Length: 492
Image 1 (cartoon, rainbow, N blue to C red):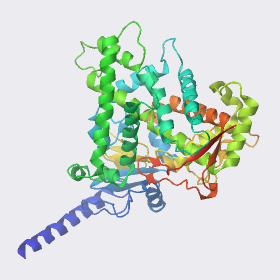
Image 2: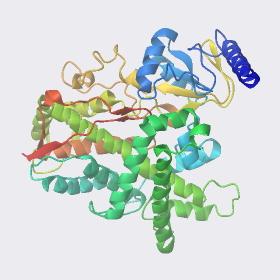
Image 3: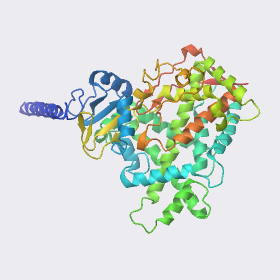
Image 4: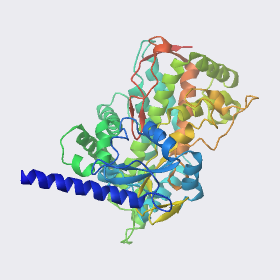
C-alpha cells in the first residue's frame, strides 16, 4: 500500500514538473504556444500519428502559424502556412538548414549520407552529389536520354498486359529505379530480375513502415520502440539489405575503376576518395560512399515512382482531364516520336496536370524535419538549440488563397486565363531552401516524361466506376501513400 502511494506521489510530482516546465517555455518571448503535454506521452492524445498533417492543420487554427507540440517528451515547433515556412526555409535558410531529429533516419544512416546528416559531412556530400548529378556524363548520355530510354522499357511492360487489369506499382518502381541505377551504377536491370524485384520490395516496405502507426510511434518514442518487438524493426533489415546491394556494386566498381574515365556516380565518388586519401578529416570515405549512394538510390526511386502512381490514379479518376492531356500531346508531339523536355513549353496543360498531381497529393506533407543549431528568435518566440522543426509543406501546397478549392484536383491551379502555364512560389513539393531535395531536377523530368509517354500510347481506364475510386491516402505520416488500385491500359 505504501509502495502504491509513493508511486502515485511520484507520478503527481512528475506531472506538476512537466506542466511547470511547459509553462515556462510557452508564451511571448519564449517557446511558441501549444497544447499542454502529458508526461512521457506528450501530445499523443491531440496529435494523431495516422494523419499528422491534418492534425497539425487543426491545431494551427487554435494556436496560429507557429506553435509547439510534444512528440513524446520532445518539443517540436510547427511552422504552418506559406509565410512562416518561407521565412524559415528561404529568408532565413542558413539558420534553419540543420537536419532535425528523426530517429528512424538517425538509426539507419548514423549521421552519414545526404538526407539525415549535418555539419561539414552534409555540406560536402550534398555539394558533391548535386554537382555530379548536374554535370553527369562528361560528354556521355544526358539524363533526359536515360529517362526516354527507360520509358521504352516501361511501355513494353505495359504492352504485355494486353489491356487487362494490372497494378502499376512494381513496373513504375522498376522504371524509376532503373533511371537512378543507370546514373549511380551505370546499368539497368531487367524487370523480372529477382534481386532487383527484391530491392523494390525492400523500398516499398521501408516507405510503408515509416508511414505506418508503428513508424510514427518509433519517431515519438524511439527509446522505447527500439527494444519492443514488432513490424517497425523489420524496416531496418530492409535498410541493411539495400546497403548490402550498394556495397556489392561498389566492390565491382573498385575492381574495374579507370580514374581517367569514370562511368557513373560510384566511379566519380571512388575517384574523389582517391584524391582525398591523405586527408584524415575528409568526408569522402567508404561508409559515406555507401550511405550517400543509398540515399540517392532510395530517394531517387520511392518518392518519384509513388508520385507517378498516384498521378495515374488521379487520371483514371478524372478521365476528362486525361483526354485533354492526350489532345495536347497529339497536337504538339504526334505519334511518330516520344515527348521530350523541349516540348514542355508548348504543352501548358500537360505541365499544369503534372504540377497539380504533385500539389494535390502533397507526397511529403511535413517535409523531413529541420532544426536550429543555436537558440533562435523567430517572430516573437525563441526556439531553443536542437529543437526539431516541422515545416508543414502541405499547408503551402493547399493554401486556399493561392489555390482556390485546394482539396480538389484542378489543373487550372497552374494555368492563366489565356491557357498559358502559371508558375507559383507556393509550389514546394520538394521543400525549399538549403535542404531542398537534391534530386528535384531529375524527379521533375521523370514525372513529366514518363506520364506523357504513357498517355501518348495508352488510354488508362479504371476497373471500377471512376466515381467509386478512393484517392485518399491509406497512410499519411512522413509521406502519403495512395490506396492500392488496378487499371487497364488500352492502346491508342
